[in-house]
Image (tube, rainbow over all chains, first blue to last red; front, side):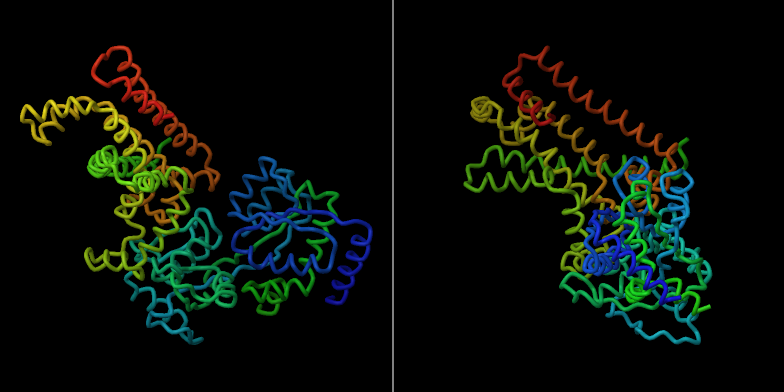
Length: 273
Length: 242
């Protein structure tokens, strides 16, 4: 299976890149931007196509696409928006697929007494204690706007803490802002995308203004899956660069990169079940 | 229709704008007076600093305020030790941000008005024994009344229209930091366009009425007044608004 995927991909590249090079514009949900940049670099090394990236919250990108924004691919942070685009005829039928499954993490400053170690046995207790003992603000992405916000809300509900922490809650417009609130030290705890903390810690040292963060991955069975779906938009019908990139996204090679950035992919998901 | 939460956002916005305007009038009057009369060489630099919020994107202010409000920064630490509460995500934080953000809209009309004041008039008053305070209340205030109204209205309206800064430092808490522009943004993002129309349309009408009020004030003044220095004062106010 893996082998076939590779072959397909190589064939596509060979056929398309030798014929002509094209440009494709990808609209991407902010949380996936750092990962996408890595993917694009790899993709462009292997093909003559050129990829332009535009990032914003999924809802904003959706609005822009509805009003004719010149995007070829949408990499959303959820599955609803790509679904809706397909339904409204703005995306090409049968191109929708889950390119990454987001993972939630609880982030906090390294200066707090909470350690980075999470005991596998009593995760529930550990999370509950950490949240109950906090006195500062707890940041989440807005559940009404962001899939990571819904996941955070569901996790807090499964811990029976949603009601009791209402007065401590602050909401970012997206999960990146939730991360920003804790990284600047304005929030004590924050539910963030695992991708946010992984990329941050590996690519960047702490500046004087940002806090080094520790994090605990939130068990994925505390919330419904954050399925980040991709879809080819109508303008990409004859755009070989866009079609090739989607094919690239499905290769094991790309999936590895996506996993390294803190997401699960079809592969890892089936293994974990 | 307007939901209770939206109504909360409306009252919060009006409260924020009112408090900001009062603070701005208290701060800006002496500042504008000093700027109008000073001969210091660094006056252009000071004027430029006051005007900065006019040209900077709100994200610049939002970014630095977020860092300043953090309990790790000296200012954030100071605030925490004085008030026992950290500053970000509070109404007080929005007031501080709004005062900075709307400062030029209040200082500039006042400064322009003060600069147009007749100096001989004040000197004459002084020779008749009026002290500074008397001069200000009996001469300066009546002559620049319209500029004060203009400055207050602009400061108020601009604070109501604040968005980017609040988005960055507010944390979207109903009744505390969720102002009208943020509530509207959420509605658009969540695709609740009907509710969004109520808020957006309401804001347009409110701003239109307020600006029309300011312009009518200046127009009446042109037509009716022949007071000392008044036309000059108002032409500079007009420039401010435009």
